[in-house]
Length: 319
Length: 234
Image (cartoon, rainbow over all chains, first blue to last red; front, top):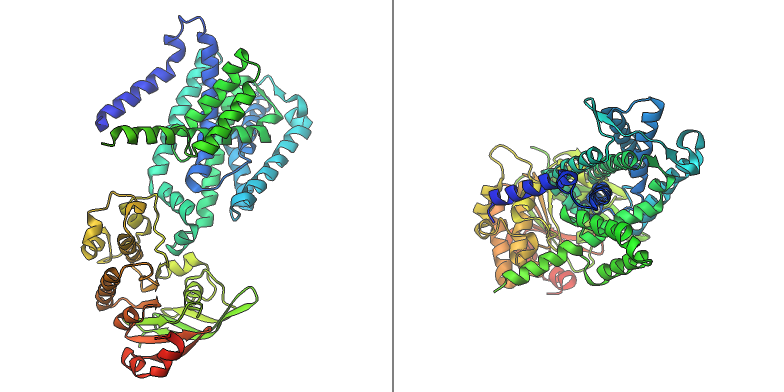
């Protein structure tokens, strides 16, 4: 396929994705499918943001939910306290809070690596979870934050399910394109360099600590966007959004799909959400299926679905 | 006279409790190529690490073009004009050859750029789109040197560039370094390969147990049979 044909195909897929609720309207399951697809895309954004750390900068984190939850709470609280449903305001609050959290946590963790990085990010994210759980006056504590209003943008009310979906899908496309171009820029190449050999990058004059911190903040901000979209979609924020379960979920998505790619985390989010949302209503052991799928990928296909696809493609093309 | 490209004075460094460098003195003058040779464990790589900022010396000074950079972090040393071709080459396998060069780029007027590096290593020119890990060992070594040159350094450190290369390729590396020397770029070459070190180095330091035990020209070294026998095992 030529370059132009590929872009046309991608654009067609993008348009199809954003308009899904409209062309699927005749289906009996259209509403359910729209909801599931919306939540898949929210988590795809979240997984993509985590992959900046895991797949590109080589900083595996088990605390990414802190920024997702932080963004979700910030959007919810901003809309309640300020009595506004303006998307630019609540989304800005989410991005700002997530960025601040990422900056603080990032400053504490960027010098560590491997298992220490995993444990530190886990522990610090649990502090954010504890605050969400116990600061009842602001966050609603264990009851969560209920009644988050859906946003309006330029006077357009986005509260109807189809419009909410379009907001999520459009944001997903923007974020994908943003991460794609960022990772192909000199900045993204420098992150790859840090992942491969941090010492070498220092010897080439790069301040790798600052590079890693910036990646942490960018990833945190995008996770905050995902969190805000989750809050609007569910009209609810629970402390679990900032908890270990959410962090692990994103990590599993990245690993199943394939780290270091755009498609991987998206496919991973699709597989995980499909098992959790669709399969769970058909069979009672869907969580076990998810566990087995995960173990299968870790043991047999470290590069995830994208890696399997690449291997198959290489085999077909080989003479 | 202008300041030396590199001046190391009375450098002491430790790995934990073991006293690895015990007072190293070393000078690379402008436009000069100096070789540092010695057996495994003599402290050659440690010396390079301490100069490049990977290891903090406990005592002594490192001056680059007259600037005191003792114990400065590696990226400061790099920004002061020092480029290192590390042991084992360490190119970025996931990046293309072109990206490997670009990531190091520090443009300078009439300086090194991709075109000039390709001119020096024509075979890299045919590999610009390939990933770093698809190159042969010899090509990786060329890329590692090319990447260091892209920094437009005022001092080039090379840590055992002959390691793991076939004799013919070592020959080629030698030729390249002699050509670089002719451009006036100051070099500090750490080597175990005596032939390569004496071909490139205008002065040779022999290192043993963390100190410099001999300094002289290659001719003087050849005459000092006892030094070769005692410290180099030839």
